Length: 255
Image (cartoon, rainbow, N blue to C red; front, side, top):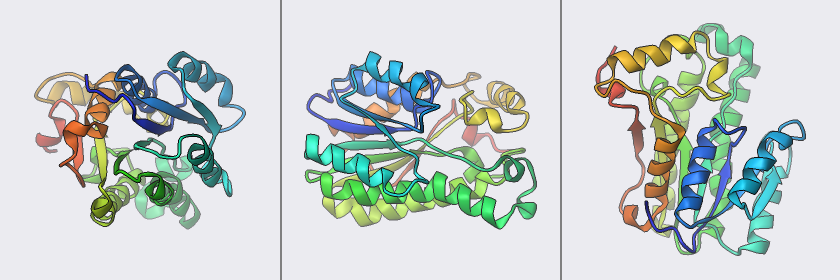
C-alpha cells in the first residue's frame, strides 16, 4: 500500500486477532515497517505472543498504563535498541462496567477518572515519551468513536472520555507540529472488538451502521490498518490534528 521501509513503530492495544491495533500492525508490517508490540499482563500474553511472532515484531513488551514506570520502560527499551521512533498507535480504552452501563450523570468520580486516565491521558503520556525519539518527525495515532461528537445510545461515559481524547489530539498536534510530529485520531465505525463487547446492545449499533451508512457496510480492522499505514507514511506529511472517520459515511447521516 505505502512504503514504510526503514520506519519503526510502536503499536499499543493488541488483545487478540480482532483488535484494531492488530489490523494496524499487520498493515505496517506489510508495508515494510519494523514494529514493537505490547501486551497488557500475564493473562493477556499467551493471546498476543503468537500474533507478535507471526508479524515478526522486533519487541514484545508488557505495558499496563496504570502500572508505575511500565510505560517509561517500554520507551527506554526502544531508545536503547532503535534509537528512534517513527510512529505510534494508541488503541486502548477502558471504563469500569458499572460506570459504562449507567447514565453519565450517575458515573462515579473514581470510574470517570480511571476511564480518562487509561483511555485519554495515557496517549498524552505516550506522546511526551515519544517526542524525544521522533528526532526526524513522526506520527502519533489514537482511536476514537462517533460517540465523542454526538450522543450514541449506550456509549455512556466513553462519549465524554473520547471527546477529551480528540481534544487532546488537536492540542498535541499544535504543540508537536514544529518538531514535524503529526497527531491524529482515527474514528472507525462499530467493530466487534474486545473493548466494544462491553458496550450494551452493541449488536444493534452495528446493524444500525449497516442500515443507515451511505455504503451500507461495516469497516474491518484491515480497513483501519490501511488508513493508519497511509497516515504514518511520507505521503501524509502535510496532514495533522484531524479526527478521521472511517465508517462507511455513517458520521454524516446524523441521528
